[in-house]
Length: 479
Image (tube, rainbow, N blue to C red; front, side, top):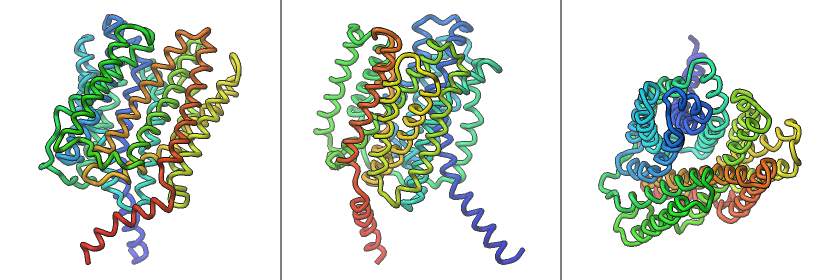
């Protein structure tokens, strides 16, 4: 082998090694988000096979989401305290084992319990995923590319879930939607242990359990109430009670944070406009995008008579655009900064959903492809910049907590968008009117996110100044 060939081989090996942490983290994140949507097309068959009641079917679907959203903040705190790689690996183990339990569940109660355990595993995986990427890719350009591909996993998994679920259920059976997690989980764990460096631990930091329990209760109650609102209506006593209790739990969390010696989210973090505003932007664009995916899925199946497989194919253009947008935004970020990407992405998403709302009753599918592609592109285009803004504003010691905050608000946005979309479809003057109203509300959410991004996401010059300030202590220490 010549010297040139040796250098080329070494460079290729280094590139493959640098991609391994990204593959590991994205595999875990994809698996978590896929489980939110893939079950939707399988649950009618599951209900018939296991003779499940309506309540049982609801818990099979929603139990995972409620536990996942409710424990995200705890997962982030544990990652900062015990090491994000360690907690991430625990999450992958729990999630994979629980998926196997779901696949071989003999009855409804067993399946519900296994789904709750899957939610626990997901809550341990997601906060550490961003923290591990931040650790593995210290260079800003490489980090933005990693964040961009991480963000595209959510759009791909959410939109591909119905398609993949339809294929698996119709060919192999409903248990295969859980068995698919086993090889993915095993590969994710092996890649993480081999190619992701151990994370620093902050074992002296106390874990504020009263605050964690309060936020768990607030998010679980809110998510559960929003899920029920789509079925029962917003004025149902159970829904109103859940919303009221969620508000009380949130107030208890705020009070505890003010009094705690070691708060889960130090006040200094929340004084940053980036960490105050960007999680709200994440809530708004998840509200709009996942509300669109949910209502479009119902529309294609119930109004147009599409099968689950045909519905997945109808949504596929949005999947393609999320991948393309994440790669493009990561390449542009170092030239433009994050603010133009987030603002333009939100404006494009608003234009797309407004176009669907204005398309009229029973439009041709060709007229709906562009709005779906615009929403998918805009959301993924903005997610890269929003993620980089949150993680860049958080100290390394609180990277897990910042990731958990961002992902918790996004989960709340998803649950709210799905619940409101379902409620509008059920209670509107007609199915078409409810659908158009849902799209108009989503467009308004995108516009609000664009305005908030202009105020909260720093411009390129501000980002460079922040980066220089973070680098100066390290340079002084080396001197």
